[in-house]
Image 1 (tube, rainbow, N blue to C red):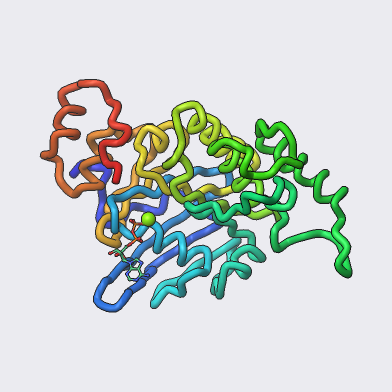
Image 2: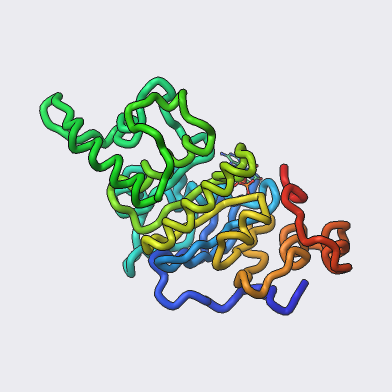
Length: 276
Ligand SMILES: Nc1ncnc2c1ncn2[C@@H]1O[C@H](COP(=O)(O)OP(=O)(O)O)[C@@H](O)[C@H]1O
Ligand SMILES: [Mg+2]
């Protein structure tokens, strides 16, 4: 373990928009989260990393109101909140892009962006307003979508992820969480999605990026929070971290082949090395 790895890192965020402390979550005999703390500032990308079963998805679900924590507190925009469910999270300004995206293939981009949040009244949909807003959101992301009137089925994997991220911006959130947004994507599409994450940051949003891919994390994150066995294992500023540090923190050991190779100064590219 390195010097930057502490049992309990100093809070490194001045004015977090989201702050968790002492979060506990148990499923039967499994303690999925223990004393977890996490801060995210506006305009900051925090990568949440850890091995399978580390508790990443559980933490995302606690923040998005899918699960209620057994203990601990969540402070959002300076006040203690209880996130009773996903729609409450949305109303507060916490938006989540889950791994399965939950898009409707047969509906067009506009319909997907406003699914469940349609504009209009008394059964009449304000298509003009929704289409305008769709273009505005896509422009915010500098996104490359050819038309907002084509069905999702006609889009590439990267474009679908773009639509899912654009949808997360409906309602002007302050925090966007992305669970493994590049897991199913090729190299070019991954780069496109990482660009979107940059745009979110430029727009002043706090971003929580869950990823297995160390190359992605090192490309866009400002800070990296490592969970191991449901606990905070380490926290790094992106400028100070090496791949060996990260792998050691994720696995809890510094004697594995990936860390060893990184220490010997071999190419620092381990994308996929800690993949599922
Ligand atoms: N709904 C659930 N019921 C029972 N156990 C769960 C449930 N969700 C997660 N777990 C357990 O909690 C732990 C953390 O899981 P998870 O948050 O999915 O980890 P990660 O996303 O980091 O892979 C694992 O041991 C997992 O088996
Ligand atoms: Mg998960």
